[in-house]
Image 1 (cartoon, protein in one colour):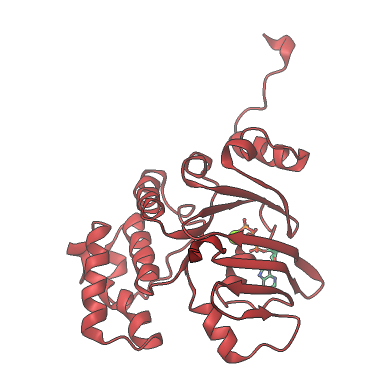
Image 2 (cartoon, rainbow, N blue to C red):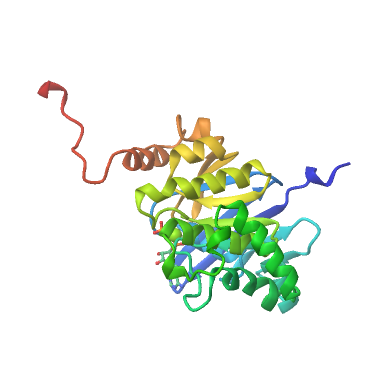
Length: 266
Ligand SMILES: Nc1ncnc2c1ncn2[C@@H]1O[C@H](COP(=O)(O)OP(=O)(O)OP(=O)(O)O)[C@@H](O)[C@H]1O
Ligand SMILES: [Mg+2]
């Protein structure tokens, strides 16, 4: 039987509080190999916190996180450093702001993780980085510094930096929301290509057209729980829950746009 039948990642009852603020109140997730999950939801609903918990940047208070072939790590019990490292290395995260090191060139930024954290030989890391940079159209920017790149180019380097870690799972936290509108397309194109190549991805984004096109499943978060989940064609077009409907209506109406005209104005 093929190993692709078991999910790559299984998350059960994930909980996280910051002081009295209960940010994740029992989140269940399942990600199958090659799938693209899109998370949507209002500000403060816990989307970033979920990604950070998966990538080891936050420690959940409770819940079980299990990658296929690895230990099921139960955060309600004592978790060893080895478990933590094993979990963290399964995924790589791309942030809203690219977070490149300003004093390092593009290639130095990309090889830093593989060389420092994974002990990859420098020559191998450079060769792989060059291949990845070429794939996103940035071969000639190899020796540029981040400040010499456009926002979209910086974000593409951020994606390459995540790919260079050779993770099983890619996590994206609103990868286009800090970009000028004309630069959004080039980053979405890279994400679309990664999806087509079979990368497994969890993406927080409010680019609904993109979500409709690439997502296998869309999850609507609110107040630390998943309120509704489903295929994009269902959840984005005909949500079952009133909260989802309200959120989508708000998202689709421009923030400072006019209120819908009253019937009798016509
Ligand atoms: N390190 C932290 N310390 C204290 N509170 C935090 C921390 N990180 C997040 N929070 C709180 O947790 C809640 C959820 O935050 P989170 O960043 O996960 O939301 P989000 O859904 O990603 O929102 P947005 O759409 O604005 O990015 C918020 O109330 C936030 O203030
Ligand atoms: Mg966020």
